Length: 342
Length: 157
Image (cartoon, rainbow over all chains, first blue to last red; front, side):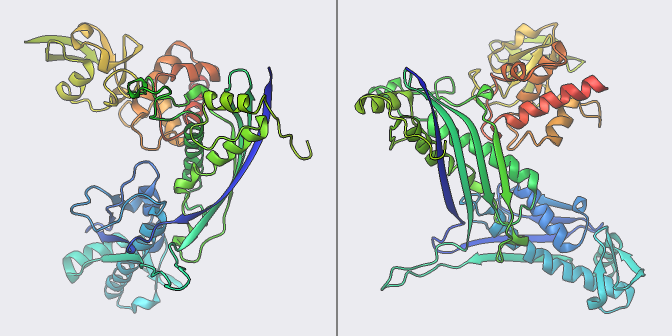
């Protein structure tokens, strides 16, 4: 009886968004009379950070401080339409829509400022600190706040923008079956080191090393946070979580958090991440977003590492001690596969 | 039948009429308007409703409200002192220790109970202290790091 070490590798190409009848997102941007900007979305932020990233994208495009932008995702009944927060599409689809809406609002902001300064709007630039001035002449300036107030109360003008980003339906070629289901891919490669106890069948993940290519990491801390949490979820799916009963009776299955197995705070795994940035041409400032692929490569890498450790190929999840032990028994014992170069 | 219960909620004397058999979580949220403890599972397995009673962490969904009469109850709603955040809150924010945020109030209270009795815990003591709090987003690591960081900051202060 022994503890066997195993190493497994997996790499993925992950499609951003989907193409079932086209994949649109809409955004609206408008200013308040005191020069703050509201971004209205129906994207739902369930922790992945679309509110933070949307705020950054709008501020960058408008040319105003990020503190002066507020994202409202309150109500999908009254907000502009979005397909939803899934398919790792939020940053890419909604981000593009926000940039378009903010671009239109910025044009109106500059026109209103031009009227106040009695100059041409095309000569105006923003300083990103809440001011608009004539290019090359910082003293010929007006604040965003004063511009918004003038637009509202003197000019009778809205500072608002509409944006939609649509990846249209891709028709299937009737001869080849070829189509373009997505617009861009993100990539990842991940290595798992683990141990398998051939007496208990228990698998313990010891180390995760990964590289993720996410376009531009628009908010590096959020990207890292999402990757760490998502990898944990991948480990959880690979080794623990199932609604299936371990024994034939359905009633023996988990019905609550006490019996639905998940790794706890004592089961965290050191995870070293390298984020590779290759800005994507069709993505908002190049950012594709990590999304679902945080978890995806973890599962096959663990299955491969278990095979490497004891020679058991598990083709169903989760890889429970029972499955590992049955596999070892079917093989007539543990069959470590060795490691090239080790 | 309703009966009056008086206790200290985050340092303030609080009186509320409670139905017999009502749980503390329900009374805090509906009776006192303190929405900081969260309802997760309602059966004491997830820890989202964790509050401190006499400084000790309890899952408030399993505590009969009448049993806190005369006692002190602390919730995340009382952690900050006006605009001054508790070191744990600061460490959670700076360490990106929340994603969806639903477990965060429970995590903060379990962590506060730990740091109040053990100002410089080891990593495994932190893991033990939050072992009754489920998190589905972060993988726990940023939370553990944030609690250790808060302990360090408090030690330095």
